[in-house]
Length: 291
Image (cartoon, rainbow, N blue to C red; front, top):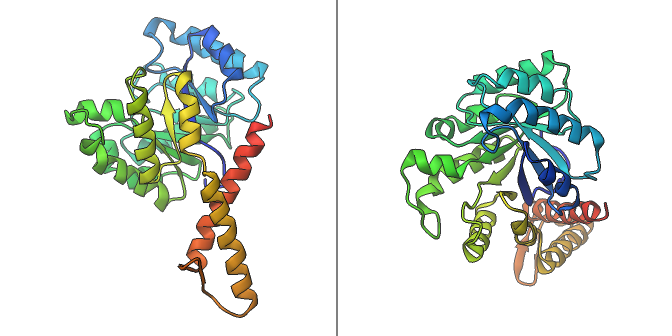
């Protein structure tokens, strides 16, 4: 489900059982919000949380933020009701947790269609070893699919990986998820940083994620939004360079040339495509900030 540039620099999880948090989210500068029915909600509170999210989304007030509902895993007792309810909510997408096969995606797609949501997008979390090994099949499973989300907390637990500053134990999994997303034109979102008090580590994790190629980061606390937004946005220097690349290549084409040299660097069509992506993203970020 590739489409126009859409900022997903900061994607904040919101507990579906916390009415105050859901209300506060209307004022937060996150690009996207995930209304959570899974990990953040105790079993006894799940039906109530489902109704609260539906009512909150129906009342609106979230501007242009992308709104996503994370349902419970399809193997659980709550998934059927979650998907049926989500199909009627005013959301942009449904996030499926612990996806390990293309069949899981197709089952969720069928459930949403049967419940009356023919166009609601799907996001998938890759957070188990099997999910990572099947990342390509999952990415190709449905035209509804819009994003792959790395569930690094669960993944690290399953891998028995240690925490390191550069997340070296997770790099293979992160790269496989990113490769699958890019191969099928999907957004790719990095996993959470579990220590909300570790501001330096969080910033480093954002920089590392952007260097790998991720579009943004999933978050668990509002105080981390500003850093994620800054790191995953094009810098002024990047934007200025992108515009120079586009202009220089246009001049070269007008002169009958397919390539040119700009400030000592070769510029050809592939560089222009990336420059256009950067400019489009910057424009989309500016438009989001206006609302």
